[in-house]
Image (tube, rainbow, N blue to C red; front, top):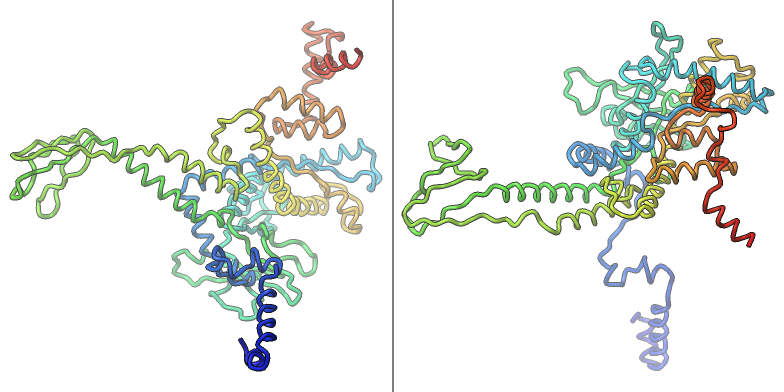
Length: 529
């Protein structure tokens, strides 16, 4: 009670009491989140202490440690390794393939002219992309670089690449891709910028725009005799606007400059689960070693009887015999000695259920259903298909992001070089922004989803094509990662050879599209009745 209430209490106790009752009623009134998630009075929340910090404190300052622990899990935790490789394999697989789709109507081209132009561009692109010369290190082709970039981004939080121009013999294109380890982009000599213009090697201007990256010539963690040096690389060319650096990262919060490893939310769970698995494995190994221990009733006995084992005896510096567990180890008994069998009761019957429960939580955080995470499909067809469909929502999202942020910018730079060198004709490419966009439009097709029941998947694909929901080109890629136009040309040759060989006739070219579905026939019959 404050001074005013005390004074009122001396003069009019009833008034003071009413004021106090009113004050308590106000406290009891529901005040939105203050009485729920933001409550500081509930026993369940009173110990939950938080501090609202900026993206600098919450993310940027913790990235080096998260990055190191994520890599350690990838190298030593099978579940973490499997999760990252599962995402990598389903998102890019053997590589996202170019399917040029220019806006021929804006460019004033016929469909036939557009198809011929797209075929030529794809042929030129494959000349460059399928060669290791597209890699600045001459180790991987373009499709293998996609795999490297994605696995690095998942593991380290982000991945960067520069696009230098390096002439090489027998390669008409000078564009190269140089994948950079995330650690090499850092502040020069651990310089601390109190204005936060340079954070983790990323420099911004007064508008918050990323303008440059500071790249170390050597990895900061490597042992080196010479002094490390940093190079400031502008994100875009100052005169040409050409992208010099591609930064592959997934943003979680506004004003974020570096990416967070995908394993960050489950680092503790994965590490503890790995420790538990290793402990259970060791216990099972020990349980498999049928060894007996000697229990003596003579306190003066210094050592049990003679040790006989399939393994050699170990001796220390004092020539004392060290006894250890072994397969079928036997110890001869001495006087007043008996045996005690070691039984750690392993394998643990609750191990599988506990690990499965933890994998469900980890899979939920990674957007990978635990059936796919463990590569264990024991449920029904519908349940397994539902899990795969849920996972493919994430895979398609990441594939689209990978295509937009990595493949498409590189393709546009390749196309600009091909046009400037006269290998591709594209009038208006360098003068009309809309024409440039029309020429650069493309699709990037990746590995198929896979089929639990191939017949049902093929029938569904046929229905989508027949109803105009999809195209034969897309379905060919999705079902088997093939090329419809190549398949169509080969089918024409095959059918011609079959007719010439008398293996088929013109009247027997019926396809599955001409055959009525038995279920649909029954439905139509019911409707007619």
